[in-house]
Image (cartoon, rainbow, N blue to C red; front, side):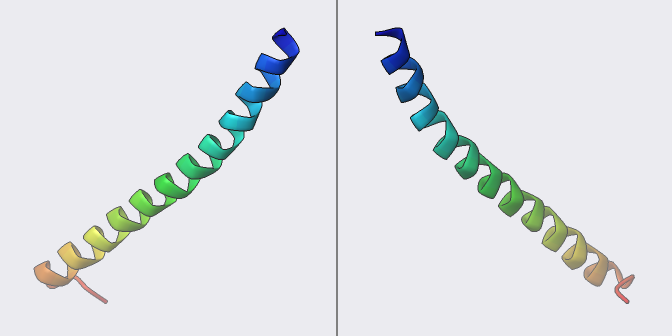
Length: 46
């Protein structure tokens, strides 16, 4: 019974980790875009 619970836990954990990885990369991309826009508006854009 514990083995079934462990397999179910891993079956749910792995997709969650993949989803969180993509979500975090998206947030970091938004931070990068925000920094680029802020630099552009301040006139420091190269």
